[in-house]
Image (cartoon, rainbow, N blue to C red; front, side):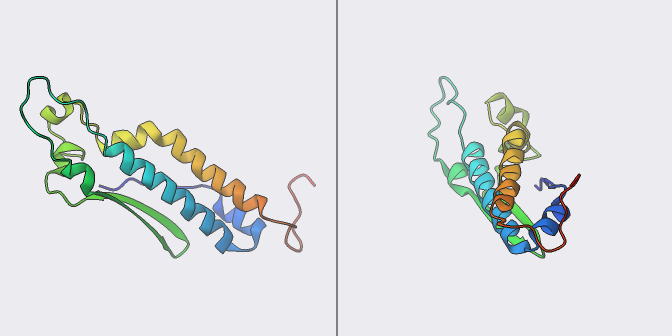
Length: 144
């Protein structure tokens, strides 16, 4: 399952900074934070079914892992599970039974956390800009 979040206006920020690496570092750190949060949220088990004798193993939660990759100026975050049944519990093929038992789809977690995720990236851009000690040569602020 793949979910994309596009950060708009990066070219303008890079032009102000004059150094792409600072911004990439801030964005990668934000992505790390977002991926870790999603792994934690997706890995939360719903309350046990009343009267069930099933003993949870915790395997699904332990199988979740996050990866962050920086490639050609793009930052990618991925949350995945190596468990074969994960798509039927937390993924796009979630069964009605898993939904009724309170399992939240990964996409639903991302949508629920979208505002928080977006704020992490806004903060990353602000952080990169705050590190700018002086504007690059020839830079004129808007309206100035």
